Length: 216
Image (cartoon, rainbow, N blue to C red; front, side, top):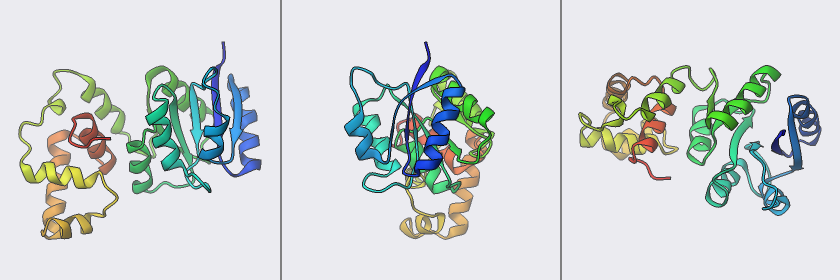
């Protein structure tokens, strides 16, 4: 049986083309929607999708709010963020709001298929664009005896920094909030990269979420 997908994107021509591609990849497209509000109205509780491909920039109810709504009401539905934005803040915010993966709209069909298949079977997909280290980080956090699972060795300042890193504040704004110099904040970040074997801010956010430092 084909897995079921839904497309939420206000660019109709792009969405229609993507719907055809997704069908060619072996997925049934239940319906399409212009925004999160229309998606919520069209959703049939008796026939839920396995995966929702979700744009970020939409009118009425954008991708961030839609992802959070899906996570709150239908946590079994997987979310793949499909966006033109490749900036760190957009990625972090979508992951925090429940996205299981994040790819760009100019992605090749083969990667789109892999992303959808991985999310449906494994529960996550993170492309090279997000970070090549992220999958390793997620796997290590799922291992009971992994050093990454323990918070031993992290001081209060580092934990406070992790909480703020999971917000939309820039590193400079984090420094101002903690009344520290940007150089000191860079030091906290680099120390955490080394301690946790992580190479990006997205990885730090995922670590904080997985270990209960940040509550969704």
